[in-house]
Image (spheres, rainbow over the protein chains, first blue to last red):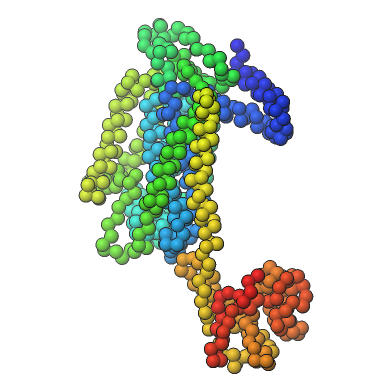
Length: 413
Length: 157
């Protein structure tokens, strides 16, 4: 049987001949100069696991929601002025007089909230299916970097409307690094552009939000997608159940395991997995073409999520409170919901441990980054690796409890 | 319909609906300025008795220029020409060719556009260069002897 790349070449030749017969001269002209047909076929007809495919829609949903942020964000730069005097006024103008722009702003806000939620689900799915294991450790690491960059986008974006909510989010957020030992107040002054929050704080947050972080974000998305396509889709435990021995003594496990042949209707098989970690987890049992089977499921999930974003944008829009007023004595600042656990830590930490607001999240990030290098067993069944799943569950419960306590405190639930 | 055909149709349909959800608000927003004309205001120019006959005299007025959030008004030029007939014209400095700022050139007795050499006479009529239309006049009225102008032209170009 021919190996992956040779098989792919054969299929590309066959399909190119078919295109020539069908008279697609323009496509062939383009292909001679760019090699686009092979690229397209590689992209469209990658083999993906058939079972559990709905669980694998979360990555593409994340990408679509990030593209929603990109498109609506670019539109918003066409009307928003990064200024402490005109920024709020420009958003107030669209709230009062420009209903379509208000929908776009609503899609940007609610898109962010749904995006953060879906990223959480995507990470949970990846964690449960053990998809961060060799050779895909860097898929997970780049994913953690993407999470941090998206959180950076969310918080710098929350600064920009310069209403009361934005202003006090700026004040509290930029105050957090001031608890760094020794250089804390210097870090705060560098972030704010001075001791107090002012025009420099706004304009540099704007620069970070529309330029610095997006460049890093899209570069990292490129890395994440490249690694995804390089290693192929392994699927999770359900794709292996029944196909291979998952239990047995060491001797039995070392016996060569026969990989099932590709189904008859499959014309090409990608070279996946590129580096089998273990015969037992070499390739999922049943696969089908990425297009149209997975794209259809991806599309349905993305459509539902975008429809939710669209509906929230139309019916709730994006709120804009009164313009920032440092002199207020009646306004109660409330953090963005995704920062509630951190906000509750600020309430709970005793005064001697205030700096915990820095090192507790830092420890969390380090744990996330270290996960694939710590959990190196080939086993992917979540019920077979309690040493990893149970602590993660406890940490998740810790975050949920902090969020619940914070919500109860702020919203009198 | 086969499972594969169904998925192909479904992928395309989903893509179309997603595209529509982006297109509606964004296109609506792009078209929005067409439905928001600038607010029209009257501004006082000055007393025409102080303007010499048959000689363009420059005044400036401040107008809101667009429907937008609150920003300071912009300065616009008004060349007031008081004809011996008694008529008073309030010309703008906006050339009808490419909207460059025209100036009055006393040595030649004409309005000159510095960009591409458009020329207008004292009545604002074209006497040379590429401009397709006469120099625009602001909509104006005289109350007693005081001239007022509105932030629109008598004939749009």
